[in-house]
Length: 308
Image (cartoon, rainbow, N blue to C red; front, side, top):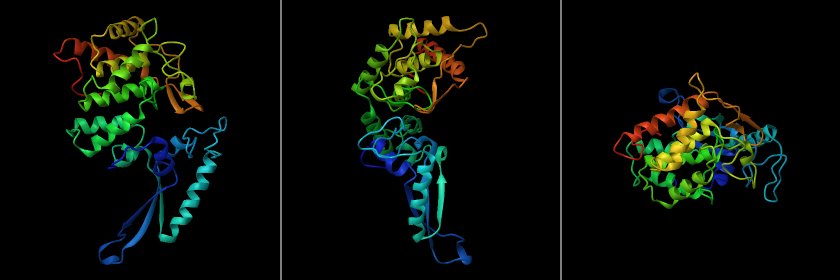
C-alpha cells in the first residue's frame, strides 16, 4: 500500500489512465518447456471509459472547457494514440499485454487508490481490518483529503455529492470512526443544509460542472433522499428531525404499486456528457432506507453495525 495519500488527479494522470504501464517479470511457459525468464509488460488502463474526459492535470477535461494547465484534446482517439505510444516504448523490453481492467481491479491496491475508495474501506473494515492496518490508514487519509470544503464528497454512478457523501459516511461508520469526528460533522452539516422543504433531497447533473452548487436540484427524488438518509443514519443521526422528515417524504411519495416514481436521471455515465436512469435505484434504495430506519428505531444502537 502507499505511504502517502494520492490526489485523484495525480493518480488518474498516471496509473489509472492509459499511460500506466506496470512492468512485471514473469516466467511464461515455465518448467522444462522454458527455463529462461521472459520479461513482459502489462499496459494497464483502469476503466478506460471513466477516463475518456481527460488525462492532464485537470481530470474532467471536456472540449467545452479548457484550462491553462490542461492541454489535452480529443477523446478515444487521443487515448488510442497514448496507448500506442506507450506500447511501442515498452516493446523494447519484451511482449506487451494491454489490459483494460476496470471492474476487475475492485478491492485491489490499484482499485483502492481510485475515487471509489469508500467501497474498499467498507470491505476492509468488515473483514476485520482495523485502523492499524496500512490499507485502512491509507483509505482514511485519502478520503479525508478528498472531502470538499463544504463537507461533501464527489460521487460517480450516482449523482453526485449526495451519493458520494453517503458512500463515504457508510465507510467511515464501518471503519469505526467516531461520529464526532470533524469530517463526519461537516458531512452531516452539508446534508442537513440541502434538505428540501418537502423533506426530500435532490441533485441534478449540473453539479458536475465547475462552480455549480453541490447537492441541489430542481426536485427531490426517492433514490437521492434514500442516500441522504442512509448517510445520516451511518453518522449516528437516526434521531435527528431531518431524518424523520425524510422518512415521511418517502412514505408519502410511495406509489400504489409499492414503488416510487422518478423521472430524473440520478446516475451518470460520463459527467457532463451523458447521464443514466437506473430503474432499480427508485425501488431498492428507498426500501433500504426505510428498513434501516425501522431497524435502528427498534435496536440498542444508533448506527448500523453491518452492511453499508
